[in-house]
Length: 518
Image: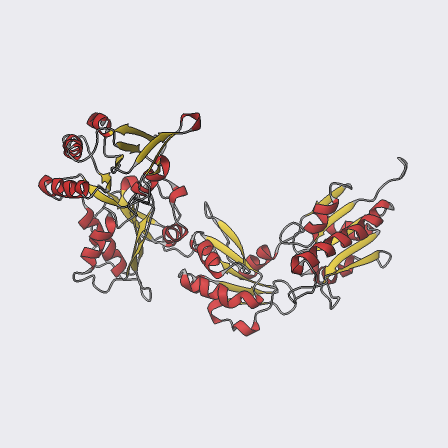
């Protein structure tokens, strides 16, 4: 090809979700001027994208029908389904390249938006680096579905997650649990698994169904009421914005107090308490299930420092309190739930490890809270987080002991320390010291030195995952109580624990899983 010869231009043109009147002005202009109009279709030869664009065709364009060799059926291609499609996309791209090399402008029609789960993207990846290219965005099926439902998808700081229904059911459930709003696409045969995932995450009642948005045969409704046998591929499940759904009538509590006398129960709504483990620090440590529970709550109850780690959401009421009133906090949460509220009790780390789950369950087994549903959602523990920073000091048997003597006498703590030391267990020591408790660390160190060598590694992990994180390893004999506070966790090695320096000076601590006698 000489310099005087001009190649054609490639256009990926989104034609919207179905209604031809939703085609953009730019898209209509390009379709009308194109030399070649291409579109993908299945073996039946029909193309939704072409049907949408038909009113903008002039009849003078060359039409290139790019027919898939397979859609969902099996194939005898040596590369299997993926191999058959790769060959098809390569051959289709070369068909379009022949037109472009001849100087013809090529418009590839794409239902919805060209780069959103669209077939055009496979042409784009193979041709855009070779020819002048323009992508024209289109209205997506997601936007169309929200418009047809007449409800916001997301508001304020809410997060929208787009999920292919072809994912494994477990993965769909995890994604649903971790988000505020969601759209699940590509239903059809995946609908039963998607429905189960919604039910499993407690979100089925909120889910809406949209079929063929803006097309002939459009259908909308509550997803729970849809017959699975009637669901086509061109349908989506929608979890709309929670902001409008949440009851925002509750008054904001600056501190924990009792519910107002005579407060009316929310008619027809069942309340519950979910004790949520948020991990040792910020959102990176949250599980998807915990994230979903926090997003779905009407009320958040917890120690103010831990509540501050949870994003503020419109419509939620936050009830913060001091860290020394666990029992009162638990009863307050249960009382809210008894009146129909969905309450998340926020607990640092794992709620069952020196945290709020015990207080909530203890109160929940007494009148008048015996019938209030209570769930406990696990979280990353401080011990596990600290161990991961140091290497693998908890690689074998270990014991977890709190050094706080506020709720149990020091004699009990010392007896347990001694028993664990005699059993040669690695120790994870919680609550080692504070401004008012200054003797425990030294006492524990001296007791352990009766059973461990002075050079035994001790991991000192402070504020793991937080902005002032500091993790270092010292010998047991050199453990300085003045460097330990309530935000520090100590991991004391067993006689088998190893401490080494690797390349670059990095220290690593690990406890072997094998014994010489084994």
